[in-house]
Length: 117
Figure (tube, rainbow, N blue to C red):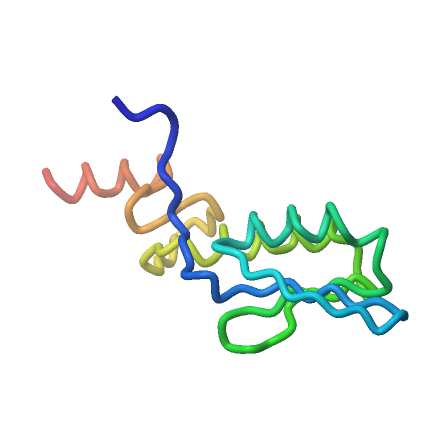
């Protein structure tokens, strides 16, 4: 029996946290997920000058000198949630923002029943 949900996002250690210090200390920590990278930054950002998260394409996606890790994590979670929503576009004739192609509003449901008879 599975306890909880299985991870939906796994990486091969290609997400890297760079810890940079003014004393010329540099450390690279490979992480298997963004959650792990966020935890590494949280543990270390106070003891270094700059902590960075670099994605698998080599892009710097977080720099502690520019943003708070908690704020970045919130934005990352929102972006991940937006990317996971794959809904067919639907134009509700009643301009109901909660009306989707696979989940019609009440007015559209009533219209569909009327059309069926």
